[in-house]
Amino acid sequence: MNYVNITGETGEKRIILVRIGEIALKGLNRSTFEKNLYRNLRDKLKDFGDPDIHWSQSRFYIVPKKLPFDYEQAMEAASSVFGVVSSSPAIACRSDFEEIRRTAVKAAGEKIAALKAEGKTSGIKFKVETRRGVKSFPMKSPEISAELGGTLLDEFPELAVDVNEPDFILYCEVREESFVYTDIVKAKGGMPIGSNGKACLLLSGGIDSPVAGYMISKRGVKICAVHFFSYPYTSERAREKVLELAKIISKYCGEIKVMVVPYTEVQLAIHQNCRDELGTVIMRRSMMRIAETLARRNGCAALVTGESIGQVASQTMQAMYCTDAAANMPVFRPLIAMDKVDVIALAREIGTFETSTLPYEDCCTVFTPKHPKTRPSLEEVIAEEARYDYERLENEAVEGTETFTCG
Image 1 (cartoon, rainbow, N blue to C red):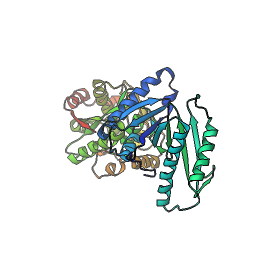
Image 2: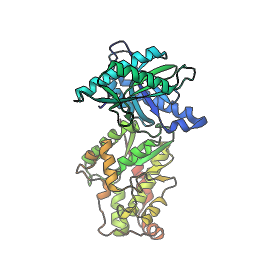
Image 3: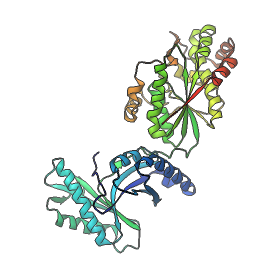
Image 4: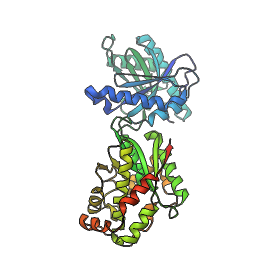
């Protein structure tokens, strides 16, 4: 990591300072979002000695109960929690200026040592930024910054002030207790999981759907997932691949229930009875009905897919209209206007890309028509659908569903 790895072993009170974003704008509902974020941080950090977590004035504070404490790993874990926009390893002290001054010298000394270890041995540039959250403190923010800057110049001859392009910034936050730090580590942002309901993700083994699950979760939606499994046309390895994808995104989305639907008989019936060029759209409608049934059983209010408009034949506006007509709940498509290049970049960032590209086909690639119809009408699709007993087959598929927990 690119920040000072504090250890808390020298007597100072070392904490992790966590910042929130749009939660702070939630007005009277703000406490609900903060409580959700607290629970999510607590669950994420339970393997780090169950530290104390409290919040005040748009900040959460993670305080170790005992040492040693793995600050670096704890910061990485906290940064993966949706709702957190950034975090800092900080030294806490009393809101007394002489105490703040001593703490600033300590924090700056650690940062300078880190920069020297990277090869920056002279001409180190810095500035000080202060935020005074307690108006009763006798000095204003510019005065605090100026005094601390002068102290550091006296203490460290290798330093020079540069407010435009500093090598590091010494941050000071004066509150009931004060906090001094030199690094801000960007986190994922978004909204706390559980603050915006629950939805069911149609999870294939491809690149798109895990990214869609990540993106909808980032808006505070708790997800479960449904996967359609057409054995023996798709292998056991294909199913394991999907469960591994769910495990990867659970790092961000929390524990995920994955429902694996035995889809072979439904898919064969469509292939054998329906016009080939409409097969994909009819299959997608079938998936929507099954997913909706399972979603309602799990308290979900919407379905989520990884579709992007125009990407393939089943993702034209007309085809998606026909697909959505089979569902009686909202269908969210977080990737709808994204380029594939951007989706791949995000898949790499969240760690799903390598698993998604393993050569195990999902059911969507089985019986793919050579010339799918890109502009189907709903009337012709419904008429074609009547050629097989989809209600019976879909009910059997629902009842045969297996459930796995990932994360």
